[in-house]
Image (cartoon, rainbow, N blue to C red; front, side):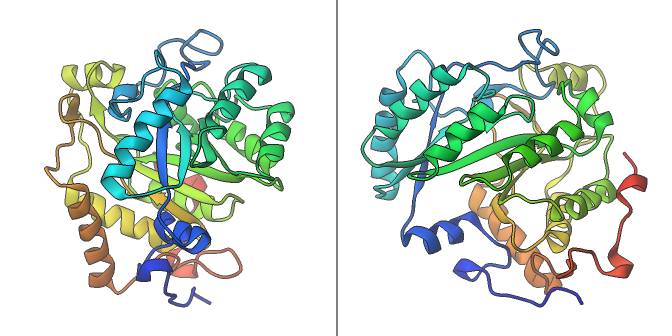
Length: 330
């Protein structure tokens, strides 16, 4: 049977992270981003050089976030700003730029424990790659998660090995599945990050991605539309031969269609990304975040649909809605 309609937290039509946090803590909890100065194995020559073709970390680093400052100072400055803006008192420290498990365990322990020692910090979110973990690091995170709110965030970006090669990712889809298997059954949460909008992929592929991810075991999902930002390989490629990117209305259609197929137990942390206007090349939607969220909600209402509408309780997509992942064009 098709998934029955359900009321998600905060009366949304998708399983939102804000609703999850409200249910868990009874109040708003804000993330504070820090830069610990890590790099990636596809930047330093271990598996490749140059990094991912779309990547410029300035596109998501806040102004207070710089590796020239200590972790504590970055957190305290971020807390001061967020307390003024949102009136919050609880924080999760987000180790975001580059691969934040790409260092020896003793180095990671120093940074993570410095962050957790700051008053008001209740946990960590650690952004990394599937090929930058091992049992020792996972055991340590498992131990931390007995006392703190810990999330390990894997950048997958695409289930297509062809795409992962084109963007110089330096790992394949199996690496992600292996990392997921190693991480499963522990005390910390697992988040998966994907990008929608690579020009050689299409809607059929993205819907097949929803089908595929819906049958995997992880807790949170982040979805970003592809951005072309300055000082990246993809920006140079776009300048030489411009390629089509998703427009606003098209993205609304794709993201709602994606969520219709997504397992409703998966909590959605993000539905779209943003980049500073001064470095963003394309696509330019000229929409505030609140407008995009309202647009997504309006599309849900227009269709009278919700997250998981076409997801079956037995873990499958209903017959006429099924897409063969292997045959989805990329």
